[in-house]
Image (cartoon, rainbow, N blue to C red; front, top):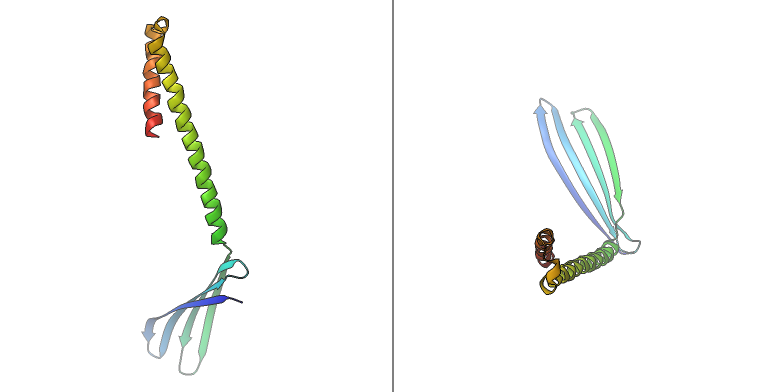
Length: 135
């Protein structure tokens, strides 16, 4: 089994009153198991202890979170998503430029469609063509 354990811990001294010492211990455990597609298990332990000369009391609060993630699957889906988005954006840009170019060419080649209302359509077509070129 190919596992890697990483342990991070932190001990902070909170206060000191007479014979009482308060400590805060936090520990984080990370498990990287490459054989079972479990790449991260996170456990957080919180211990608050009061130490006296004659007694030892421990109050503990244990939280556990399990995150199962396969980075290879994310990389694959991410590359497929990028390809699909690139293809769709390129197709939309090509259709925008070619369609608006046809409107401009038709306006130049056919004198009968050069009316005042069609100048507005020509203006929209030129603006849309520029947006398609920027895209």
